[in-house]
Length: 276
DNA sequence: CACCAGACCTGTCCGC
DNA sequence: TGCGGACAGGTCTGGT
Image (cartoon, rainbow, N blue to C red; front, side, top):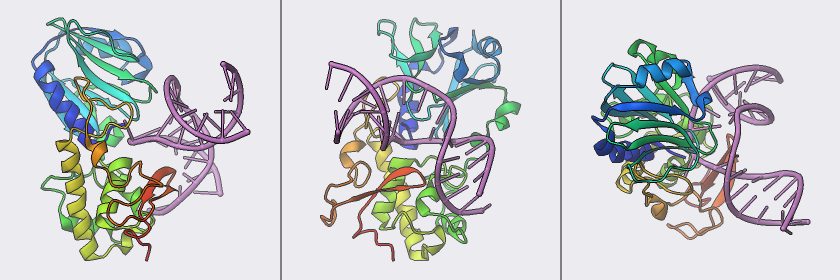
């Protein structure tokens, strides 16, 4: 489900409700989604602690607790991190419920159960491979045109697969990659190496724009995605490529094509995104 | 290194 | 109505 704009929206919507609250109890409904430590240790590290701070890195949501434990959540395809007020009914597919000191709950719910959750000491954070190896974030000072040119050069794979790799750029997923390739006019099957300097400059701007627009729209709700208080995003109304296979291109009217790239469904305009 | 299939899971949709 | 297959916003592993 969620890519960087969705996680950022979740973080922002949760913050006013759960920051500063104490977690009085932890209810494990599906403990296999806890990857570290053991379920017993997980509970003992969290119970009784206040939520000092919320952070986001790439597609990871991180709650920093008063005892310097980092509650790290990755939602994968269908996970949700949501606040339920004292009188709200339970979420479907709740997997782990954190009972707060004001009678509300912070709920980790996940239909497909592919999501992961950790309660780590600071010195254990490097055990989470994906988190330790994340590249720079779009919109950050580290994500420069020069950096993008540098990582593109010499790479022989497909640009689409390349942009999905979190160790190069953190936070892009299937929706936003299709969008920024469309806006930049780059065919998803091209090699990163073939992207010219001018195209890299444009791609850099398009990655930032697509992510910024996604955040401003509160994310993209295609199916399950909801923000931290159950609200839908609106960026699905502003998409150019994702989900538009067989429909006319919003720029030129050509019918959009749907193909598979690296096993992922991929939509592009054969006219605006020519191969050569 | 590149690339793919398969794995991890459940739910939904589409064609027969 | 029922069944089988494809597909879904993500990552990881193992094989070629």
